[in-house]
Image (cartoon, rainbow, N blue to C red; front, side, top):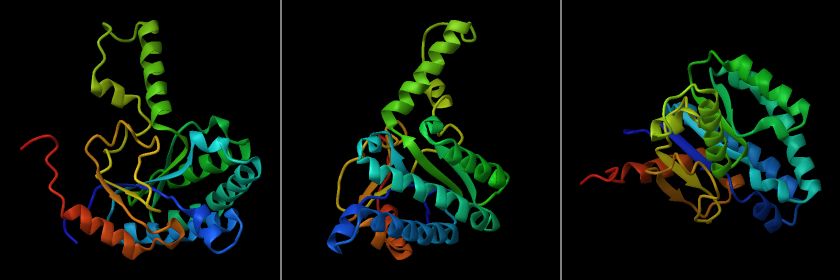
Length: 233
């Protein structure tokens, strides 16, 4: 495949609906969603994608029922423990965006261990958005800039786009070339709002647990047929 996107972002949507259609608990849908993620990671690695960012848990997800949040946290802990070594063997680097401070210490520790284990890997950068919200990310970036102003570490009060980007969670990676959202919903849901100024958007009716490596290839083919002008003629 030619013109492979450098950075793909995914909103993994539809786990609950997938489970409901099968008259199963929502947690079953989330577990099946992990299987889909494993397949997509493998295909992204095969295709030579450099960065894959997935929306795993948003700042708004805390409003879900406590039982579901607990199940999601257990699943997250299980996933990080079980997958980090396998991803390490594949030369995948694990990174995160979002405010991890709200998670249980056990989860924070496992995430830190996974990031430390894979930090020197040179293959696919698997970036997980956890307790992430685009507005919250921009707010935190502005807070850091204001703090630097108070300390006298920056001159003047003018703020450039480049300066804001230096304080974003994604400062070490390029903006997404392609966003894929599953389940038929057509909105960004507070995801990478700054970074997606010129991202190509692909929406699919497929529920996330049914999304495959072949579906990823189809989305990339759609992207390849787009004419990206970035505001130019």
